[in-house]
Image (tube, rainbow, N blue to C red):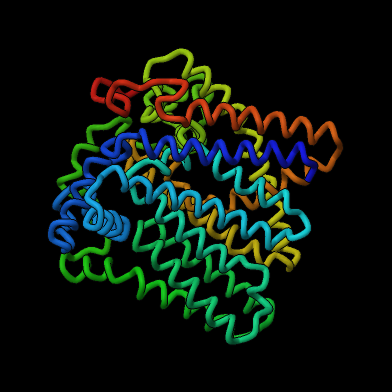
Length: 441
């Protein structure tokens, strides 16, 4: 990497880390998605160290690992301002895990690993969750750890001893992801698919045994919470609890198949979740909240400058999004050719996560559930495939490399402007967009 490019990369990555430190210091711990309810769960564990009933509060039906870690932190040092630093550190860990996998996949291209880290660190949904008291980042960290182990290029050619240890470690990480969030369940079959692919290629039962071992370990580590729910309360995961009835009054209140194919112009022109056109678009809302503060927890709700920043950010975000999709295509072609051992778990995780998210959006037809932060488990596949395509495109000539660098640099500046809490823009009102007065379109 040339000295000028290395300096630019170092500057941008330092800015991304600095933004997270600033946000951890200034973002109120009681703000954020479901933060007040999460604090109630944390306080219940801190006080009694006993799992409450799932219907006790808004968040108490969620798996306990994050809340237990936060409660332990509060027991050791009773300072609420320290709890968000858990997610700040975990978020940096996700970027390191993504860069580490890319470095192993492309050892001859060290610049790609730096790019992979930057793609994660400048993802606005990742920036937001690095400051909030929420379990999403913990789940993303363990998903990244599990998928990184399963996608390691040495997996399919390891000796029996190391291969066995890898399967166990993968199962532990996958189980901890499940114990962090229900969506963490999806990384287990994604990792098992990697071993099934090995078995298909080598016609070996040993690889199938490793798949079974990975699943069994994950079930033991993370499944006990859901088994406890089933034994004590009659369900693995509750749905429609009385404590969540408030959501039933949220718009739009129903979903149609058309909501999954429409991406309106408002996705770019007015990226806020209660825009009447965007309200009906599942993937438009998800894209807007993945790449911008569409739920308005960091930025002012009513601001023409914020709207313009959102438009610029989302248009520039089409570049890494297109690179990610192109990389997915390359990975799929490698699998079909028979040399995609590392691609199988990554592709499986993408397919399972998007399908699960779509099903969840169908079953819960309310704007509040459509958050790009719910897709943070895809950080490693995103960084892997987007960096692959961007590096390939940059080798088409000096002009292509300069254009890509300029566009990515502008995107990074937009993310810094929109993701630095009380920086360029100051939010004085309570977070979120008032939805009670919104009528269904």
